[in-house]
Image 1 (tube, rainbow, N blue to C red):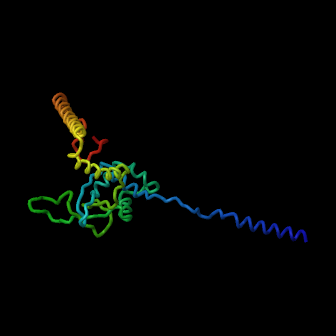
Image 2 (image 1 turned 45 degrees about the vertical axis):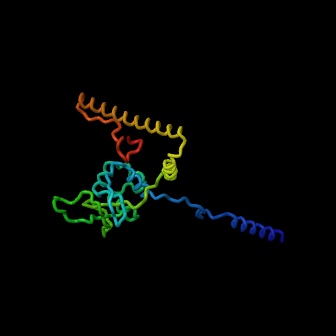
Image 3 (image 1 turned 120 degrees about the horizontal axis):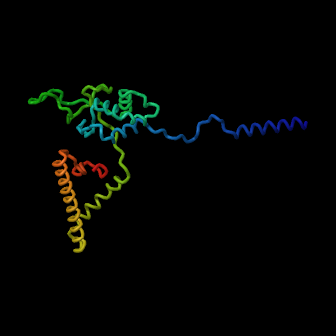
Length: 234
């Protein structure tokens, strides 16, 4: 009787321990969200300056687009961008583009005006109006591809968007400022303007001297007058 009662107690312990222990192959409760490597790749390509792109109107929406042949030559010149794709980095350019089309990160477009206008010998290289192409397959020959995803803005740009209304209100209230504040703002703006003009004058003088002596066109701060250039690109 003692042995049978002891064996029964052992069986109960085994059952309890097996019920408490979770199965080894059970999936975790929280799985890490896998990032879309093709989305990251598309963003890196978009941020790269060497891929030539233009803006056009697609179904009453302004979109940024590039040409198929430019995309092929761009990836040939910068194969390191494919490293973002991890296991898919061995894919060909056409296969990568087709995946981007399937994920709706790109959309293939066609020019609206398909006839040569009077007085011109060929169609426009960068048409201003586009329409969606029926077959969403990559091609190099006279094919255009528009980006469909919105570029992610950094935090400082978001904060700056809230700052602009405050700055506009401050400018509108300038007539009611105290006299000392008006003088401070006036002298500050005049100093900044004088600094910019002096920099342009020195820049032009150096360019002229180097062109006369060396016969080469060398510009310091070549993008200083470009509207879309950032501080790093000056």
